[in-house]
Image 1 (cartoon, rainbow, N blue to C red):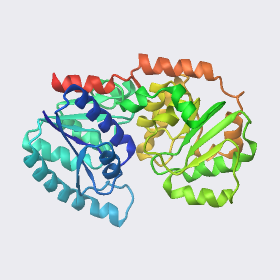
Image 2: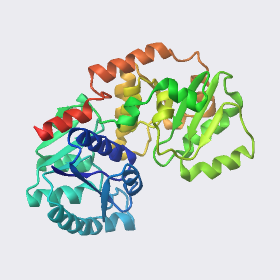
Image 3: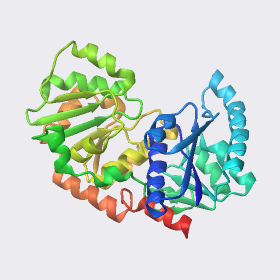
Length: 356
Protein backbone atom coordinates (compact mmCIF):
# COMPACT_ATOMS: atom_id res chain seq x y z
CA UNK A 1 0.00 0.00 0.00
CA UNK A 2 1.05 3.59 -0.64
CA UNK A 3 0.42 5.87 2.32
CA UNK A 4 0.98 9.59 2.82
CA UNK A 5 1.35 10.98 6.34
CA UNK A 6 1.14 14.73 6.84
CA UNK A 7 2.71 15.73 10.12
CA UNK A 8 4.25 19.08 10.77
CA UNK A 9 5.08 22.08 12.86
CA UNK A 10 6.07 20.73 16.27
CA UNK A 11 7.25 17.40 17.64
CA UNK A 12 3.80 16.91 19.18
CA UNK A 13 2.35 16.44 15.69
CA UNK A 14 5.37 14.80 14.09
CA UNK A 15 6.16 11.99 16.54
CA UNK A 16 2.68 10.39 16.42
CA UNK A 17 3.03 10.34 12.63
CA UNK A 18 6.39 8.59 12.95
CA UNK A 19 4.90 6.09 15.42
CA UNK A 20 2.13 5.27 12.93
CA UNK A 21 4.69 4.88 10.14
CA UNK A 22 6.68 2.45 12.31
CA UNK A 23 3.56 0.36 12.89
CA UNK A 24 2.76 0.34 9.16
CA UNK A 25 6.27 -0.93 8.43
CA UNK A 26 5.83 -3.65 11.08
CA UNK A 27 2.61 -4.67 9.36
CA UNK A 28 3.77 -4.30 5.79
CA UNK A 29 7.57 -3.98 5.44
CA UNK A 30 7.30 -3.07 1.77
CA UNK A 31 4.68 -0.34 2.27
CA UNK A 32 5.56 2.88 0.47
CA UNK A 33 5.34 5.74 2.97
CA UNK A 34 5.71 9.40 2.10
CA UNK A 35 5.62 12.23 4.63
CA UNK A 36 4.47 15.72 3.72
CA UNK A 37 5.33 18.69 5.90
CA UNK A 38 6.03 22.40 6.01
CA UNK A 39 9.27 24.06 5.06
CA UNK A 40 9.04 26.03 8.32
CA UNK A 41 8.57 23.14 10.79
CA UNK A 42 10.78 20.60 12.56
CA UNK A 43 9.68 17.72 10.34
CA UNK A 44 12.39 18.20 7.73
CA UNK A 45 14.92 17.12 10.35
CA UNK A 46 12.93 14.72 12.54
CA UNK A 47 11.34 12.65 9.76
CA UNK A 48 14.53 12.38 7.70
CA UNK A 49 16.43 11.15 10.78
CA UNK A 50 13.92 8.29 11.07
CA UNK A 51 14.68 7.21 7.49
CA UNK A 52 11.38 8.14 5.85
CA UNK A 53 10.99 10.08 2.63
CA UNK A 54 9.58 13.57 3.12
CA UNK A 55 8.53 16.32 0.74
CA UNK A 56 8.03 19.87 1.94
CA UNK A 57 5.32 22.31 0.95
CA UNK A 58 4.52 25.94 1.66
CA UNK A 59 2.33 26.27 4.74
CA UNK A 60 1.96 28.76 7.57
CA UNK A 61 -0.08 28.90 10.74
CA UNK A 62 -3.14 31.15 10.79
CA UNK A 63 -1.95 33.39 13.62
CA UNK A 64 -4.45 35.17 15.85
CA UNK A 65 -2.53 38.44 16.05
CA UNK A 66 -2.03 41.05 13.35
CA UNK A 67 1.30 40.66 11.58
CA UNK A 68 2.86 40.09 8.18
CA UNK A 69 2.89 36.34 8.83
CA UNK A 70 -0.79 36.36 9.72
CA UNK A 71 -1.69 38.27 6.56
CA UNK A 72 0.46 36.09 4.33
CA UNK A 73 -0.66 32.73 5.78
CA UNK A 74 -3.70 32.16 3.48
CA UNK A 75 -1.63 32.93 0.38
CA UNK A 76 1.28 30.75 1.51
CA UNK A 77 -1.09 27.87 2.23
CA UNK A 78 -2.78 28.28 -1.16
CA UNK A 79 0.60 27.66 -2.78
CA UNK A 80 0.94 24.62 -0.52
CA UNK A 81 -2.44 23.34 -1.69
CA UNK A 82 -1.33 23.28 -5.33
CA UNK A 83 2.00 21.73 -4.37
CA UNK A 84 0.09 19.03 -2.47
CA UNK A 85 -2.15 18.34 -5.45
CA UNK A 86 0.89 17.75 -7.65
CA UNK A 87 2.64 15.50 -5.10
CA UNK A 88 -0.47 13.43 -4.33
CA UNK A 89 -1.27 12.95 -8.02
CA UNK A 90 2.25 11.72 -8.70
CA UNK A 91 2.47 9.46 -5.64
CA UNK A 92 -1.13 8.21 -5.87
CA UNK A 93 -1.56 7.01 -2.26
CA UNK A 94 -4.33 4.72 -1.06
CA UNK A 95 -4.87 6.80 2.09
CA UNK A 96 -3.81 10.03 3.73
CA UNK A 97 -3.13 10.12 7.49
CA UNK A 98 -3.07 13.56 9.12
CA UNK A 99 -1.80 14.23 12.63
CA UNK A 100 -2.86 17.88 12.58
CA UNK A 101 -1.02 21.17 12.64
CA UNK A 102 -1.04 23.99 10.12
CA UNK A 103 0.85 21.98 7.49
CA UNK A 104 -2.00 19.48 7.25
CA UNK A 105 -4.69 21.85 6.00
CA UNK A 106 -3.58 22.27 2.35
CA UNK A 107 -2.74 18.56 2.12
CA UNK A 108 -6.10 17.40 3.47
CA UNK A 109 -7.96 19.74 1.09
CA UNK A 110 -5.95 18.43 -1.86
CA UNK A 111 -6.58 14.79 -0.82
CA UNK A 112 -10.32 15.45 -0.57
CA UNK A 113 -10.37 16.96 -4.06
CA UNK A 114 -8.58 13.87 -5.40
CA UNK A 115 -10.91 11.43 -3.60
CA UNK A 116 -8.19 9.99 -1.34
CA UNK A 117 -9.56 8.58 1.97
CA UNK A 118 -8.49 10.77 4.90
CA UNK A 119 -7.80 9.64 8.47
CA UNK A 120 -7.12 12.17 11.21
CA UNK A 121 -5.47 11.74 14.60
CA UNK A 122 -5.98 14.37 17.32
CA UNK A 123 -3.50 14.44 20.19
CA UNK A 124 -4.98 17.04 22.56
CA UNK A 125 -8.09 17.20 24.73
CA UNK A 126 -9.21 20.29 22.82
CA UNK A 127 -8.87 19.49 19.11
CA UNK A 128 -6.85 21.98 17.11
CA UNK A 129 -8.60 24.40 14.76
CA UNK A 130 -7.34 22.59 11.65
CA UNK A 131 -8.60 19.20 12.85
CA UNK A 132 -11.95 20.66 13.87
CA UNK A 133 -12.33 21.98 10.33
CA UNK A 134 -10.95 18.90 8.55
CA UNK A 135 -13.06 16.37 10.51
CA UNK A 136 -15.89 16.97 8.00
CA UNK A 137 -13.61 15.73 5.24
CA UNK A 138 -12.30 12.65 7.02
CA UNK A 139 -13.36 9.03 6.76
CA UNK A 140 -12.39 8.53 10.41
CA UNK A 141 -11.12 10.63 13.32
CA UNK A 142 -8.97 9.04 16.04
CA UNK A 143 -8.73 10.67 19.47
CA UNK A 144 -6.28 10.45 22.37
CA UNK A 145 -8.55 11.62 25.20
CA UNK A 146 -12.13 10.54 25.86
CA UNK A 147 -12.66 14.12 27.04
CA UNK A 148 -12.28 15.21 23.39
CA UNK A 149 -15.66 13.65 22.57
CA UNK A 150 -17.41 16.76 23.84
CA UNK A 151 -15.74 18.73 21.04
CA UNK A 152 -15.47 16.27 18.16
CA UNK A 153 -16.78 12.83 17.25
CA UNK A 154 -14.24 10.07 16.82
CA UNK A 155 -12.81 6.84 18.16
CA UNK A 156 -10.66 7.01 21.31
CA UNK A 157 -7.48 5.01 20.69
CA UNK A 158 -4.79 6.89 22.61
CA UNK A 159 -1.72 8.68 21.29
CA UNK A 160 0.76 6.68 19.15
CA UNK A 161 4.17 6.41 20.80
CA UNK A 162 7.38 5.50 18.98
CA UNK A 163 8.68 1.96 19.44
CA UNK A 164 12.03 3.07 20.85
CA UNK A 165 10.24 4.84 23.72
CA UNK A 166 8.03 1.82 24.45
CA UNK A 167 10.80 -0.77 24.24
CA UNK A 168 13.70 1.03 25.98
CA UNK A 169 15.16 -0.96 28.87
CA UNK A 170 15.19 1.06 32.10
CA UNK A 171 18.16 -0.72 33.72
CA UNK A 172 20.28 -0.41 30.60
CA UNK A 173 19.34 3.25 30.24
CA UNK A 174 20.32 4.02 33.84
CA UNK A 175 23.62 2.18 33.42
CA UNK A 176 24.32 4.07 30.20
CA UNK A 177 23.62 7.43 31.85
CA UNK A 178 25.45 6.43 35.07
CA UNK A 179 22.45 7.12 37.29
CA UNK A 180 22.51 5.92 40.89
CA UNK A 181 19.78 7.86 42.75
CA UNK A 182 16.61 9.64 41.66
CA UNK A 183 16.67 10.94 38.12
CA UNK A 184 14.58 13.98 37.20
CA UNK A 185 14.09 14.80 33.54
CA UNK A 186 13.25 18.40 32.60
CA UNK A 187 11.89 19.25 29.16
CA UNK A 188 10.56 22.62 28.03
CA UNK A 189 9.12 21.47 24.70
CA UNK A 190 10.57 21.41 21.18
CA UNK A 191 11.89 24.98 21.42
CA UNK A 192 12.69 24.99 25.13
CA UNK A 193 11.26 27.38 27.75
CA UNK A 194 13.09 30.43 29.09
CA UNK A 195 10.72 30.60 32.08
CA UNK A 196 11.38 27.00 33.09
CA UNK A 197 15.10 27.29 32.39
CA UNK A 198 15.37 30.35 34.64
CA UNK A 199 13.68 28.49 37.51
CA UNK A 200 15.96 25.46 37.16
CA UNK A 201 19.15 27.53 37.05
CA UNK A 202 17.99 29.50 40.08
CA UNK A 203 17.49 26.31 42.09
CA UNK A 204 20.75 24.50 41.29
CA UNK A 205 22.46 25.47 44.54
CA UNK A 206 19.68 23.70 46.46
CA UNK A 207 19.64 20.36 44.67
CA UNK A 208 19.07 17.32 46.94
CA UNK A 209 22.19 15.17 47.11
CA UNK A 210 20.42 12.04 45.87
CA UNK A 211 19.09 13.70 42.70
CA UNK A 212 20.49 13.73 39.19
CA UNK A 213 18.91 16.18 36.77
CA UNK A 214 18.92 15.84 32.99
CA UNK A 215 17.85 19.23 31.69
CA UNK A 216 16.87 19.42 28.00
CA UNK A 217 17.28 23.17 27.59
CA UNK A 218 16.52 23.75 23.91
CA UNK A 219 18.93 25.13 21.33
CA UNK A 220 17.59 28.66 21.69
CA UNK A 221 18.54 28.98 25.39
CA UNK A 222 21.56 26.71 25.64
CA UNK A 223 24.18 29.47 25.32
CA UNK A 224 22.20 31.62 27.78
CA UNK A 225 22.28 28.80 30.34
CA UNK A 226 26.03 28.36 29.83
CA UNK A 227 26.50 32.06 30.50
CA UNK A 228 24.47 31.79 33.70
CA UNK A 229 26.57 28.85 34.87
CA UNK A 230 29.73 30.83 34.12
CA UNK A 231 31.88 27.73 33.96
CA UNK A 232 30.48 26.15 37.12
CA UNK A 233 29.94 22.40 37.15
CA UNK A 234 27.21 21.39 39.55
CA UNK A 235 27.14 17.83 40.86
CA UNK A 236 24.14 15.94 39.56
CA UNK A 237 23.22 18.54 36.94
CA UNK A 238 23.44 17.58 33.25
CA UNK A 239 22.57 20.39 30.82
CA UNK A 240 21.76 19.25 27.27
CA UNK A 241 20.85 21.51 24.36
CA UNK A 242 18.61 19.05 22.48
CA UNK A 243 18.20 15.29 22.15
CA UNK A 244 16.86 13.61 19.03
CA UNK A 245 16.83 10.22 20.77
CA UNK A 246 14.89 10.66 24.00
CA UNK A 247 14.33 6.95 24.67
CA UNK A 248 17.13 6.48 27.23
CA UNK A 249 16.48 9.59 29.33
CA UNK A 250 12.73 8.91 29.43
CA UNK A 251 13.27 5.25 30.36
CA UNK A 252 15.68 6.23 33.13
CA UNK A 253 13.55 8.98 34.70
CA UNK A 254 11.79 8.75 38.07
CA UNK A 255 10.03 12.10 37.63
CA UNK A 256 9.59 14.44 34.70
CA UNK A 257 9.06 18.20 34.67
CA UNK A 258 7.56 19.24 31.38
CA UNK A 259 5.21 21.39 29.38
CA UNK A 260 1.86 19.67 28.85
CA UNK A 261 1.94 18.74 25.19
CA UNK A 262 -0.17 15.65 24.56
CA UNK A 263 2.52 13.64 22.80
CA UNK A 264 5.07 14.21 25.57
CA UNK A 265 2.44 13.21 28.13
CA UNK A 266 1.72 9.99 26.21
CA UNK A 267 5.41 9.09 26.22
CA UNK A 268 5.62 9.62 29.99
CA UNK A 269 2.44 7.62 30.55
CA UNK A 270 3.61 4.63 28.53
CA UNK A 271 6.74 4.57 30.72
CA UNK A 272 4.78 5.03 33.96
CA UNK A 273 6.53 8.26 35.01
CA UNK A 274 4.96 10.74 37.49
CA UNK A 275 4.84 14.31 36.16
CA UNK A 276 5.10 17.93 37.16
CA UNK A 277 3.34 19.71 34.32
CA UNK A 278 3.77 23.41 33.56
CA UNK A 279 1.24 24.25 30.80
CA UNK A 280 2.49 26.73 28.21
CA UNK A 281 0.18 29.71 28.84
CA UNK A 282 0.24 30.90 25.22
CA UNK A 283 -0.63 27.56 23.61
CA UNK A 284 -3.49 27.83 21.10
CA UNK A 285 -6.80 28.07 22.99
CA UNK A 286 -4.93 27.14 26.19
CA UNK A 287 -5.10 23.46 25.17
CA UNK A 288 -2.11 22.40 27.31
CA UNK A 289 -3.99 23.31 30.47
CA UNK A 290 -6.78 20.89 29.52
CA UNK A 291 -4.26 18.12 28.82
CA UNK A 292 -2.60 18.66 32.19
CA UNK A 293 -5.91 18.76 34.04
CA UNK A 294 -6.86 15.26 32.90
CA UNK A 295 -3.60 13.81 34.24
CA UNK A 296 -3.71 15.79 37.48
CA UNK A 297 -7.37 14.98 38.16
CA UNK A 298 -6.48 11.31 37.96
CA UNK A 299 -3.51 11.61 40.33
CA UNK A 300 -0.64 11.22 37.85
CA UNK A 301 0.64 14.79 37.84
CA UNK A 302 1.01 18.01 39.79
CA UNK A 303 0.17 21.10 37.74
CA UNK A 304 2.13 24.31 38.31
CA UNK A 305 1.14 27.52 36.57
CA UNK A 306 3.84 29.09 34.42
CA UNK A 307 3.79 32.26 36.55
CA UNK A 308 4.31 30.19 39.72
CA UNK A 309 7.15 28.00 38.42
CA UNK A 310 10.02 29.62 40.30
CA UNK A 311 13.22 28.27 41.89
CA UNK A 312 11.57 27.92 45.30
CA UNK A 313 8.62 25.97 43.87
CA UNK A 314 10.86 23.67 41.87
CA UNK A 315 13.06 22.98 44.92
CA UNK A 316 10.00 22.26 47.06
CA UNK A 317 8.60 19.72 44.59
CA UNK A 318 11.80 17.72 44.07
CA UNK A 319 12.97 17.47 47.68
CA UNK A 320 11.56 13.93 47.91
CA UNK A 321 8.92 14.74 50.53
CA UNK A 322 6.35 16.77 48.61
CA UNK A 323 5.34 14.02 46.16
CA UNK A 324 4.25 10.43 46.73
CA UNK A 325 6.04 8.80 43.79
CA UNK A 326 4.53 5.35 44.35
CA UNK A 327 0.98 6.71 44.44
CA UNK A 328 1.58 8.84 41.35
CA UNK A 329 3.14 5.89 39.47
CA UNK A 330 0.09 3.76 40.19
CA UNK A 331 -2.17 6.57 38.95
CA UNK A 332 -0.11 6.95 35.77
CA UNK A 333 -0.38 3.23 35.05
CA UNK A 334 -4.15 3.34 35.54
CA UNK A 335 -4.39 6.24 33.13
CA UNK A 336 -2.30 4.44 30.53
CA UNK A 337 -4.31 1.23 30.62
CA UNK A 338 -7.86 2.23 31.57
CA UNK A 339 -8.16 5.50 29.66
CA UNK A 340 -5.94 4.45 26.74
CA UNK A 341 -3.88 7.65 26.90
CA UNK A 342 -0.43 6.08 26.78
CA UNK A 343 -1.14 2.58 25.55
CA UNK A 344 1.46 1.03 23.25
CA UNK A 345 -1.39 -0.29 21.11
CA UNK A 346 -2.55 3.15 19.91
CA UNK A 347 -0.64 3.06 16.61
CA UNK A 348 -1.63 -0.57 16.11
CA UNK A 349 -5.33 0.24 16.51
CA UNK A 350 -5.11 3.02 13.93
CA UNK A 351 -3.26 0.82 11.43
CA UNK A 352 -5.71 -2.06 12.03
CA UNK A 353 -8.56 0.18 11.03
CA UNK A 354 -6.82 1.51 7.93
CA UNK A 355 -5.88 -1.96 6.70
CA UNK A 356 -9.35 -3.20 7.70
